[in-house]
Amino acid sequence: MYNPDRVMRQFGLKQRIPLLTNTSKELHKIDLRGKTDKDWSAEHSDYASMWTERASNIANDELLEEPMGFYDPYMVWYRRITRQFMSPRGAIVEALAHGITSIHQLTLGDDVSILRIRDMAASTLTTIHVDYRIHNMLPFFEESH
Image (cartoon, rainbow, N blue to C red):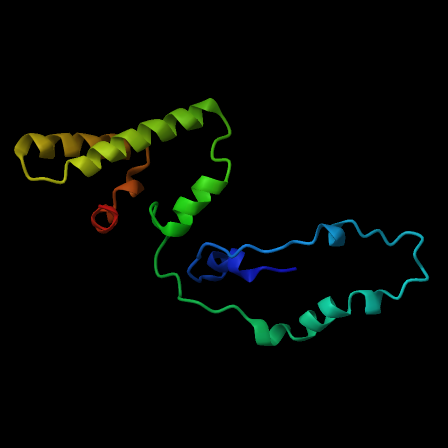
């Protein structure tokens, strides 16, 4: 069965954490070979009805106004449920970026030495091309603490 809530972003809509669905493993096991006596239209009438009614089941949501942020709830969920790294090097870069992003978050005060540390963290994140993690971070930081 098609789950449009899993591909909203591809259509310019806000991507949310998808609902759990029961994907029938039995459907994937169907083999039509040697089953010429089976009435497949009756067997799959429920799915045919869903297809016929497809125009009344169009997914709608908010338009995606800007790229999803690193701390968007969907991205946090996605990183939790997916395999993120193809190599140990990728995991090392992630650990580095996470640590420096955490340092950057802790330096939101206005003391001169704190500002220098914050600038160094931001510069390092820019150098390793993960500075998108700190753009618009303040609202996230305030919400989570």
